[in-house]
Structure formats: C-alpha cells, structure tokens
Length: 407
Image (tube, rainbow, N blue to C red; front, side):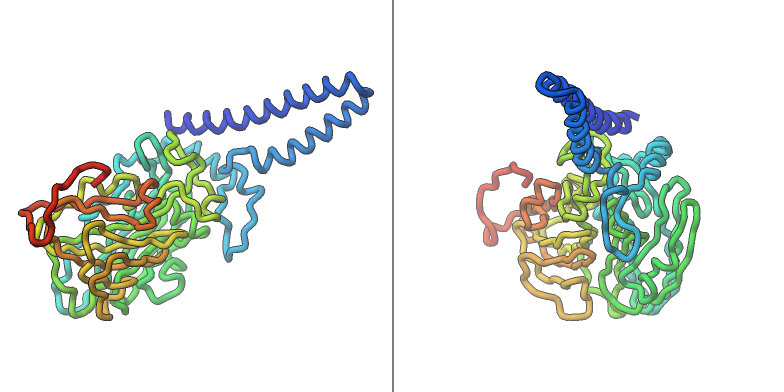
C-alpha cells in the first residue's frame, strides 16, 4: 500500500502544485493590472493568461502516465503505446491483487539441460503471462508484465525437427491481453496471432522447430513495444540435430530497457513513460530484469569452459556484449548455430530482438564483469559479475589485484 500511496502522493502533489501556482499567478496578475486599467480590461487580460496557462499546463504539466491517451499521436499498425485513463484506474483499483515478487530476476543458471536424444520428439511447453509488482532497485517499484512471474521468461530448449505444443495461459489477475511471438516459429505472428489471450484464458499452438539457433520470444499484443518494455521477453534455444560442443557451465542473460516517469533512482512506484520509450531514452538498462541481478549468482572455476546465451529484449538499443578481462573463444553471431562461429572476439553486437552465444575458457581466477560496452549504461544497471575461483596461472597473468569499483 505504501508504494501505491507514494505514487499518488508524488504525482498528486506535482499536479496540485502546478494548479495552485497558476491560480495564484492569475490572482496576482489581476490585482496588479486592476490598479492601472479598467475592470473589464483586467478580466480580459486574466482570461488570456488562464487560456495560455491551460494550453501549456494540460499537455506539459500533468503526470505523463495520465496525459498520454489525450496528446500522443503515433502511426504504428495497431494501438499506440498509451496508458488509457481507464487502465490507470483499473491498475489502482486492482493494485492489491498483484503478486509481490521478492526477486523479479530469473537466475542465470536456470537453464534446461542439453538435449541428448538423437531423434525428434513432441515437446509440451506451458507458459503463464502474469502481471506482478517487484523492485527494480532498492525502493524503486515496478509493475512488471512477465512470462512465468520473472524477467526474462523461462529459457526454452528444443531440438531441430521437434514438434512443439505450446500453451499460453494468461493469469486471471492480469489486466491486459497477452500473446507470445517466438522468433523460431514459422507462422502468422510467430505464434502471436493464435495466442491472444484475455485474463484467465489459455490458447495452444503447435509448431515445427525448423531452424536451429538461439531465438528471442516476446509478447506481441498491441502495443508490442509497451509489453516488451514491461519485461515480457525470453529466449528459445533450438539445438542443431548434431548438438552443440559440450561446455561445463551455461548462463542465461537477457538485457532489457525500462522507461519510468520518475528519474533514475527515484523511490516508490514507477509508471512507464511512453514518451521516453518513443525517444529511446530508458531510465534503466539491466540484465535479467533489475539492477544488481547478476552480481552474486554466477560462479565458475578455472579450467571450465562456459557458455553464455545472451539476448537483447530491447526495445530500442543495440547491446555491445563484452566480458571485461576475457576474450570470447567462439561467438555464434546473432544466434546462428549452423555457421562457423567467430573466433577470439572482444565484443559482439546484439541487436534489439536478437541473441548471441559466446563460449570462453577460464584460465585465471578473479571477478569478470559482464557489460554492455556502451559503458554509460553500467550506471543504469547493465552489468553482472562472473566469479571464478581456482589456482593462479602467473604465466597468463601476474599482478596484484585491487578489489573495488564493482570488480
């Protein structure tokens, strides 16, 4: 209840404060000009002032989350990325019904095991779309829209040639329709056209996993960008028939952007800022749904080969994925598992809605910071730490490591 009241208080004070300022400014102007002109002229000047004030105040002074339905014009193929006033009222009315998730971040180690069978199979997958409330940063609360209650959605793993039967449920507590578009699917909307589910509803699709690769999936209910900017994305791995080279550890990381009406670090409940999303200016750029999500839960040892499945949920920015202090031995660019991988790659580009697979062997112990190498984004949350233990190898690296600064 406190988070809801903090939002209402902050934006209520903002709105009422501006209104009071304009009213008293009008009274002051009336009293000032009344001494130097007639009463009709004073009223006329006051009317002009109030008219101009309303003209600027209504579109620019009201909290963004409330004004967008009235003033934002877009030209996409479906509904614009607005929050209609009814949605806002429904959100406040149903706020206490949303599940409070203690940690929105999905563990980077939560990955299905490699596929060992040599034949195709029928694979059943169930996913639930659910709107929840959780912290983006300490004291910064967000209304997330999720697949299975965390960000990113679960990593899905099938084999090239498998037939996949996927059922999408929409939790009854959701306020919005949702769907799922899997970039691995050949068919209308990547499956989204057949999985548009209302709250409490379920729909099933069946598709053939025709193409090997690492693919994004996301909600594609209009407005698509709006749903994705609330956290509705994940990845599906379609392993080649011949499999992938074995590794010792696998990690699942998806970068995402979040656009809030409050400035970076502002406490309390934050509502999505549609204009910031349209301008491509997120307040938070994070791995796995929140700031600090990958600082304590990625461990490996010297001598191990690790594989990172990295995706970019977008919706606007290209990610420059890099591991500070490591070189990627193999990079399967843009999730391509069929072509020969790139070798000895320092930084790999991952487009919005794209993915990559990076393998590297750990030779020296220490903390390795994973980043989007557009490094200003670290300050918005785009980083994690792979902690590596084991014996030193002074032939490869010799020096006194100074700890601090997040390393």
